[in-house]
Length: 316
Image (cartoon, rainbow, N blue to C red):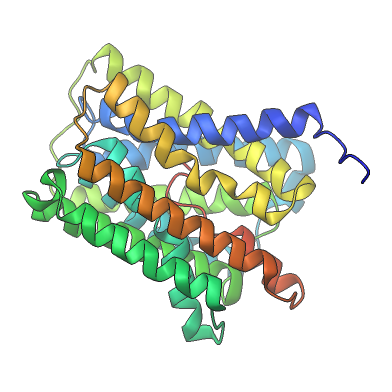
């Protein structure tokens, strides 16, 4: 049999960026919380990242880069769900539960996307259904662990985050498409950032601690530059040059990275039962991705749905 061609270096570098950077953003959020309230910290990072990305697009392409009014409306709805609800509630959940376990819980997003797809006539095949059931079993086991069982607010926030992110993911590929390329994601970050700042005001969040701690300042800059711009650019490259399965393979790598970093650098404690539950969840994700690989192609919409199941962190 002929040997498969080796992956290009830039493709490998993009995969590593998505694996390591997005896997580390959960711990970075935890450090940023030392000085920045959850909604305020997430809102400012997305406003800055979205502004930089949109500014770059305007410099490169002029006014042609701007989304249409309808695309701005789509960006507002999707940004409110995926960033306002998804990332905002994720940051709030990290006040109560360790970053590594939060990342593991968020790995159920592909399962939720598959389940919500039923509302739009997308029926899961046997492998996808098996993955959803296995993942659900892992989630139930994880929620019985010490980290989640004593923190009902943490559970409420992370369940809300995954539901809103998943619904936004489905809508963005079925009913409310964004502008093509970086302009679409820039508009999503700008609109989501505005929603997050409004939520910060409505929630009565305290003012940021000023001056921030060194760890919080570095973490916030890291989230803007590496999490939102560098890793995002790497993800766009993967979508254009790799299969959807390879481009979205970080969905079951990020939780492992987040767990290891949380234990190593964050001093977080993960019990044996929680490690086991995390493994079961990741097995469910693998089954879903395998099921999507064998699903018959149904045109561009099918490919878009396959590629749009990242957990909170894709635009992170």
